[in-house]
Length: 489
Ligand SMILES: [Zn+2]
Image 1 (cartoon, protein in one colour):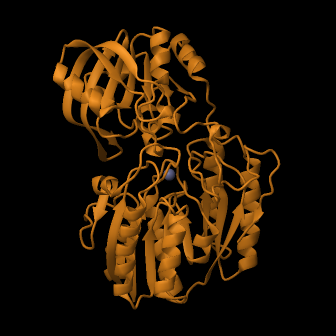
Image 2 (cartoon, helix red, strand yellow):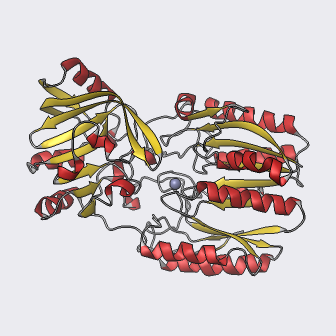
Image 3 (cartoon, protein in one colour):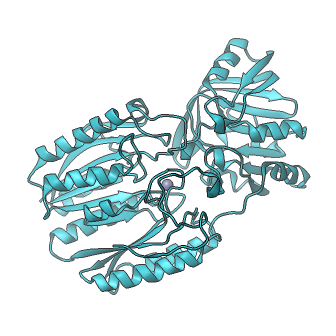
């Protein structure tokens, strides 16, 4: 039995002004066959990693393809996408004959000329391997689950948890289902219900927690093989952006349809109640300053680098300055040029610095201030669970009672070291502002006396009605009040 595995992955925010070229993949995951590290999966490479570990025991030969993955940003360079795709498809052709294929695809990649990158990959892969080969795909739930992908794959699975703590577990599920299909034990049939809604669904909140626990309990009995909630990725102007429910049953299409419909209707009934409430920037800063406990964490999800934002929006900082906040710290603000200027000035220097607000209109305008350089550090990092996330060279600057951490490697706020490695004790601060949507909660949640989400004018607004969609299929909630949810596959 011969299986092939490869990865092409990024999450594209088509509203982000930062283009994604092959350089971004080379900075993150750019592994040719046999080069994948043995310690742990990389971004979206769990299907290959898990298959490699299990090949001998489960009696199949794994042919490893390339793995390419980049951090979220704007639309991908067309020639660079085609280069990576054609490399993987060439490997696939060379690996024939194959019984199975395992793709680790994020599922929300958009390249110039390709609104549905994963659909393009799967359609071309199907043409190469033929109708009998079992194609299995692992997606991030923040994906666009298009009909083209459904038509060109046999088994499609999304992570269930957000934050995504179950990437490897779902890759195990995918491999199980592909192998059982190849052994003739099961015959997967998929159904897809379109909820016609855009939403955010952290599984740390009670309503979604309960939904995911019920999804899990349904699997492995009564002929149900797998259930995925497709959250959607709101920050892309593509036709099939929408929340969907995907059910895989064993041979019984009517059964898959019925469950997809039942869970889909339940998902529709949860509209507007699955995400944390948010405030305006002015109200959020005001209530943080008025709160008696400390630290108060203010999250700025609209400028989350993890969703493709530049992370240089200045709006929350301006509000802190205007309201003369004291004992406050904000990070990370991505501005490699300002970091360079701070290194040139040196620790202890007080000098006029222009920083932030550079990359696009959704960055706001730059801040001009007399700043004091309080710390400089080369090769900084922060932790995210067991992983060290590099921040590059960093500078801490002080404006009145506010400290700002400037970084060189664009990334979201994840670990307390973002502040503490530059001499800012997060526990001793009254207000901590973090640029992140939900991942910050792992480290900052436990120390926060209160968490306030604000909706700034960054490129990932919480209110989806602010986004200038042109290709999105309508009607869809919350842009339209009347929608027509239903089974579509
Ligand atoms: Zn995601």
